[in-house]
Image (cartoon, rainbow, N blue to C red; front, side, top):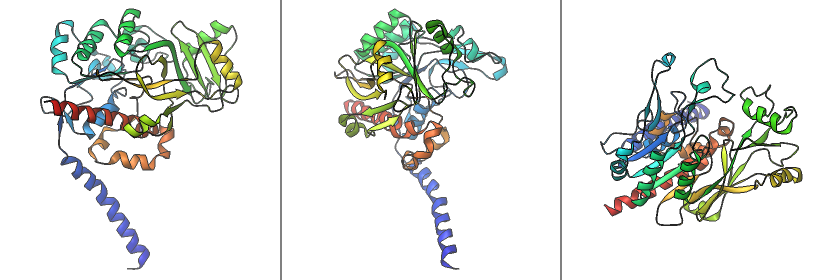
Length: 386
């Protein structure tokens, strides 16, 4: 056998053995028991994309419930549950009940509110225009959701909130109380990056944003390039277009030295999803969003009282453990089957670049290491107290 052929078979053997080794290593990792409540009201499909990536971490790190079973992303959460068959359009809702709040706060170790935006008529019923706004079927942070977080905080148990638990359709009273609980303030501005603002080239672009723009400015929607759109709670729109208002078309998250050292986060990473503009209160800012505007874009932001830098990750500065993510961090197209391979995340971080266009780069380089550090550190803390 000549040298090139021998080298080929050696490489093939290594490639074949590595996944097996990763699987065996995962199997023999110790299990970690921690009772976690996951709330996700935005589940318009069976994919459950707004909390599935968090469950990937729970499975990968071998977290189990108090009944010794692994977390199941299709069952182990509160919120909206689509029922099969899909064509029946039947659903169930698992709510936090007022009568159970105290009992739940005693039994759960941690709470993660991934998304409370909800499910809407055009999302749920096929054949409707999903790019237009429609009436709510279910959604918003309600008083029971708030009371549960309040009781968890009283017990100094970990609570994590994520973008949209404050925004529409949450009522002002519940929003204000939840803001006070996390010691922050939402400015009522949301934003998102779009690869194309052209509704012809990008048919999925939200038509309701275009409608608000026409009503506000009394002129047609004529944007063609990539860009960032800001939308306010009171239906105002600000558009920053690439090559006109922006030096860099996509928002970036920058992490300070503290966050880089503690959580192993990169200095900067692009962020292509929905985000919020919030004031940090007395929280510690771990990471922040940066919109790279030119002079024209800066004038647009200033005239609408929108900063070009604002918090992305907030960490409690008190002994009441909580975090707030001011972006749609958890929504990532990740496959659960990869969670059974120890070290899989390291492989993805090394591969890195090919995942950018698939929306996964942010997950492997930011969300996954951040959330893994948070829950593993918290688990060690509560285990040490027991």
